[in-house]
Amino acid sequence: MIQQDIVDWMSKSDFITPPTTRTDTKKLQEDGDDAYYELPSPPETSNARRSKRRRLVMSAEDQRTPKRRRQPDEEEADVDETPRASSSRHGKRSHPRLSPSRSESQTSSQSNASSRSSPSKQIAALEINLDGIQTRAMSLTDDSMPISLRRLLTDMDKCSNGLRILSEELRAEIEKHNEQQEFGEFSTVEDWAYGDAQTRNQLGPTPSTRCVARLVSEAKKCQNTVQNEAGWNMMVHYPVLYEAVCSEELRQLVGVTPCTTAKIIKEYLPLQSQPKMVDFSLCLQPEHDVFPEAPVDAIRQLRQALPYNVINHTDFLPLRSHPITVSIETKRRGTGSEGAELQLGTWHAAQWNFLQDRIAATGGSFEGLDLLPAIVIEGHRWSFAATTRKGRKTVLWLEKPFGSTEGSLGVYKIVWGLQRLARWSECVFWPWYKKNVLAV
Image 1 (cartoon, rainbow, N blue to C red):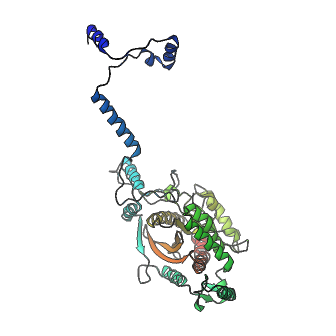
Image 2 (image 1 turned 135 degrees about the vertical axis):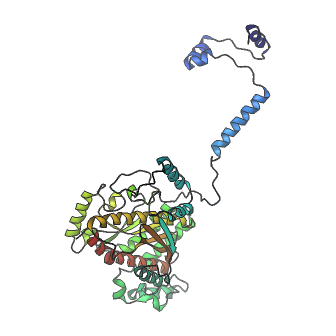
Image 3 (image 1 turned 60 degrees about the vertical axis):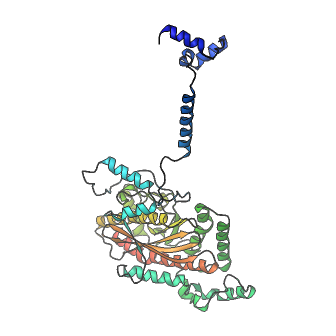
């Protein structure tokens, strides 16, 4: 553009440049040299203004709308989901090497894609991994299910039917309750719900009716107020676990530990899986063993030898000296079970990998331990689950409902089921662990 053209254009422009005062000049200088020396632009045409508006609208829509549409089979993120671990860990265990043809960027891309996909897609992907997870339906007629698991499932089935879950010592108290209320919490209790007091109490104490009524009331409050997962855990799930497992005695072998922030040590994860967490664990407290000296000393030495000074597949400090026996995953009522299955399966797969490494180091075996029990809680409903090992693959068996906090009888079923699993921890897992992991 020649000088005369510029002059002609400026003379035809419909703007007036106000006189620049000293104050204005100083302000422009403070704003920066670019603002001070910037020349006025020619007025926008209508097409230019429309184009600019379109860009602004599109930019605003981009900010409001996710850049990627969720596929129909992908679930919405669950705000109540147990947090996922995000930190990387380095340890002594290493995964099988990937094929040289697969680059690190490909592996990273697959890992990121896996973390974004729905639980059902992640489970499907893990099914085809050599050290992945396979889900199966629990059935007493399934010959591939270990005998020990079928026996445990039989007991949990009886529990769900309410067979001998109450101590005979409670009969008088419950009958008095029924006399006062025709349609009370125990109006449907039959004779077969009572068991011999001595036999029943071997599993653990039976809570009082007053205690159970309070738990039911808290569960109803959680439902009515639409509590989130953390609220259910604090108000209902942990109190039920405590009443069932923790007796009045100060020294007991099996305890319960909240572990919603427990991270899996990366090296124990199945290949190409994402870290998952659970909410509670039943664990062994070796310091309360009948003869604690040998196992406590062996655990101390093992912690010194392991990279994170812990004896589990997680570096969660409250569990650093307490072996995990039963893992418990909770979900808010009505959120579905696929997420819980993925979390539980991944958690147990890592635990099996840890135990595999330990018996390889001690020369032990899995003889005597062919399952790891678990519990899935969804709102009121409590269900029994378990994993077994098939080569390097973890088989997740789902699931047997055995109790509910919707009513008092359902809570007593939960208590009996938890005490049965605590007994398994003490009588099956602990002897195996001492022999094959601690070598004592």
